[in-house]
Image (cartoon, rainbow, N blue to C red; front, side, top):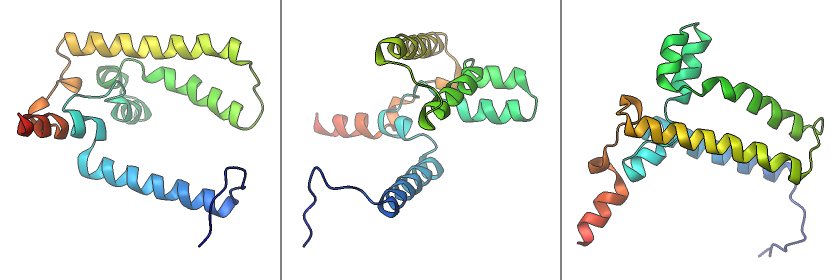
Amino acid sequence: MRVCRANSKIRPGQAARAVLALLAVAGALVLLYHCPFRALFGVACPGCGMTRALLSAVFSDFKTAFAYHPLFPLLIPAALWIGLRLFGRLRLSAKRETPYILLFAGVFFLVYIVRLCSGDPVVAPDVAHGLVPRLLAGLC
């Protein structure tokens, strides 16, 4: 039996298999439950509607795209930023990068709260069908 050590290196083949396995699990969850967060808690996640918004934008239906998720245009600079960081083309210190990340997360969360409070049908809560609320109801 092989014992993993904290300082042992992960081979590229192992990392690729792990990533593929995670993608397969995530894909199965999306296909079976559409949104794992909603399936667990009965409430939409802050990114709910983002995939539909991007697909609508790809087909030039921007009105529908903004209805699904008003922050979908922010994904383009975010993806560019992440890509540049991954390939070493963008190097920012944590001190300079953290405010941008916090601003992005804060705006995302604020829009999520506004969407929940305004009755947006894309993020309408359905707590009765969430796994965690049903489990908790069974305990009481």
